[in-house]
Each structure stands twice: as C-alpha cells, then as structure tokens.
Image (cartoon, rainbow, N blue to C red; front, side, top):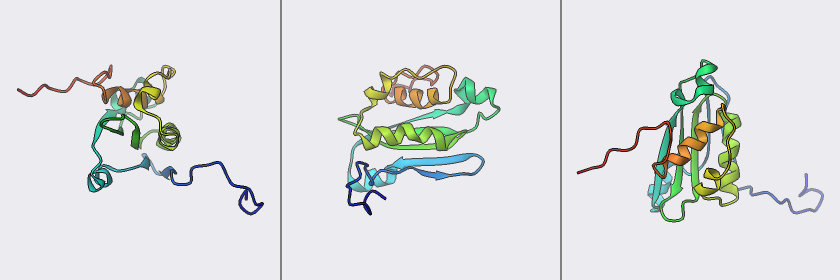
Length: 142
C-alpha cells in the first residue's frame, strides 16, 4: 500500500519469516546451514530442545527444537529454525535480530520472562557461547 501511495516503505523485504501452521508448528527465517556452507560463510550452530523448557512441559508440548545460526566471527544472527510449540510466534525474535543485524549478545543481554517459551530461544543463543543453563556442555575432544 505504501508503494502504491508513492511512499518508500521502511521495512527490510529481504528478511521474512516462513511459517507452517501445523501441529507441531514450524518456522524459520534467514539462512539454512546448507546455504551458509554453499556461500562459504563460517558459522556456529546451537540447538535447544523444548523438553528442557518448563513452560513447554507445563503445556504438554515438550517436543521440538530451536536452532540458531550465527556468524563465527561477528556473532550476528544468520538463521533461526523452530519446530515446536508456538514456533510461528517465537520466530519474530529471530526475524527482528536478522533484519536489524543484531549479534547474539543483543539477545543475551535481553531479559526473557520466566517461565516462557521465549526462554528456549534465549537458551539456544547462550548455547552458541557454551553458556546455556539447561544444555549439557559440549564434550572437550582430546
């Protein structure tokens, strides 16, 4: 509508969430791991299972996962993939981060209410720095 009226919309049309309204819900925004590999972009990935989130368990919806991809050097959020309860609502945080070029520290500095599903997103972000509270730390290779 803004374009029809001769205005330039102030929105990043390159970044949009993809949502599938099924049970379980599925949503993603940004790059996939395959796309990052094809483009030769170095990245880190972190996954958080809804089974470790109190709100998901209290809803009886402990199945699912949130995966966050971030640049290895600059730590900017590059992709978010969610399968699970309210994925289509939760993807907004990833869309906001990618559309505005936010790094993972922007998310880590943001208080996420407890108990909420958004804490799963927060924990996945913490996992990129091996600081997640409800994820077992990665094994050190010898």
